[in-house]
Every structure is written in structure tokens, then in C-alpha cells.
Length: 328
Image 1 (cartoon, rainbow, N blue to C red):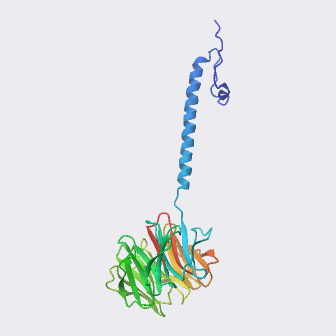
Image 2 (cartoon, rainbow, N blue to C red):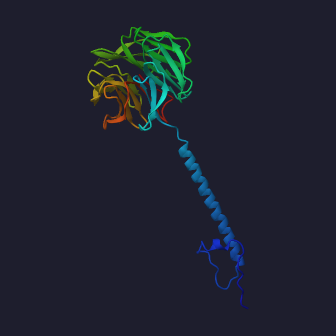
Image 3 (cartoon, rainbow, N blue to C red):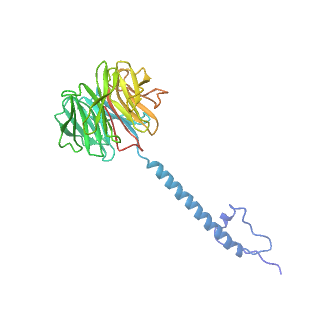
């Protein structure tokens, strides 16, 4: 007896979109309807899963932490900020009276800077809101560094020839190292418990002491008029500094051996910072009104941000960096 064709009910138009599923001649549609419904259910589940995964991936991409570069614009009395790639430079904090050094506390979302014009260290939220006086009575401040492990803040005082230290909340300021000359910095090596700074002169020198201030020694001599601070690469055991007298960025081993010219043609360098995640070095050129960038090995130097008005300190906010970043 000839079997009759029974047309399936429901979303029959959807079946035409899947030509691989066809009713075989001589069969009713009822067994195949269940198979098609099972296929449709699996297809919907797969589509929803893929769509959900796509949403997760898109959300994750948008959740990546922002990366910025900060600098003190002495000529406009501002701290300015741009994306790490140099785009979108904006005024971040205004009314900064001769800002010298910048330090970031990415753990507690704070930015610190020295104001030579007001004899203060000031602090604001990382987004630039709520600027407050943090430490007063700072005599010609020349740089700043944070020790978040031990909750300390360090700064140079050109007027008293001292490195001073206080608790991170600003309490208990004390003389930490005296007799440091006309100095810039400092830079902290928390791994080996050392503090470094530059003493300006021709010849000048880089000095080092234990983090507790004991045993200050001459570390690198023959430094030609460095007023731009220093930066430490503890991963590769290098120390970097800017020399205005020679228009160079120089580099040595962390133990002070093998000092070499690293980048030449640096016009009145003032501030230096390292991005070890992306293998870049940044510096401020006051004489050329710009921030420069090169590969960490010194190759491919480029103008990164122009229109910098008498720039001083520089600091980087890197997504995978340690919890603090500072430069004088």
C-alpha cells in the first residue's frame, strides 16, 4: 500500500535553510520531524553558545586596564597625561606650581608630585580628582619615589642637600641621608635594598646607599651634568641616566660597571622612565619640547609626544607593571 506524505507542522521554512536534511521518498514526515527538531535544538544551542562566548571575549577586551604616560608641564603649570602610544594628550591636573617629579601608586590609585613653587609634596586620585597638600616644608624638592612594600615615600631636597623620607600617608618626615649635594632622583631597588641618586656636576656622579640610608658610596663617576633623574631595570640589571652635558642617555650594569652611551642627540634631557613590558624607554627633552621613545636597547628613537612645554618628571602606568612608577 502506498504511503502518504504528511507535511510537518511548525517552522517548515527553516527546514529549507538546511538542504542536507531531506525527507526520503516513500517515508512519512513524522519520524523526520523529530530529527529536525533535535537538529534545530542543537543548532540553537550552538548559536547561543557561540554568541555568549563572543560577548565574553568582547567584554574581556574592553576590560583591559588603561595604559598612560604622565608628565609635568612646567610651562603651563599642569600635569598632563596621554595614552601610552602618545595619542590623546590632555590636561590632567592644573594649578601645579613648578612640578618636578611624579610618582604613581597603582595599588591605592594615587598620583604624587613635588611642587618646588609651593615647597610641598601633593597627592591626588589617579584620575586627577581631589588634589591635596600631602607633605609641607619641602625645601627645593627635586624628585620622588614610593616604597609601597614598606609604606614609605622618599624625596630629594636641593635646598638642604638631603634625601628625606616619610610614611606613605605623609606622617613622620625625617632626614634619611644627608650631605648629598645638588642631587636628583631618587630610584629604589627594593629587591637588593638599595637607593640611588644623581649628584649634579661636571664631573658628577651616581651614588648608592642601603635602603635604610646607611653606607652611602660613589657608584658611577664621570657623569656629565645629569639633572634628569635615573631609572633602574632590575630584570636585566641595568641603570639608565640622562646627561645634559653630553646630550646622551647612558647605561651601565646595575653594579656600576661598563658605562656606555645608549642614546645620543638628547636635547636637554629631563626625566626618564622604562617600560619593561613593551621594551621601551621614554625621556623628556626640554630643549626640543617633546617626549622621546626608543626600544629598550636604544634603537629606533622617535618623537613620541610633541608640544611639551618645559617638561620635567615622567611616569608610566603600565597594565602589567609593578604597583608603583616614578621618575624625577
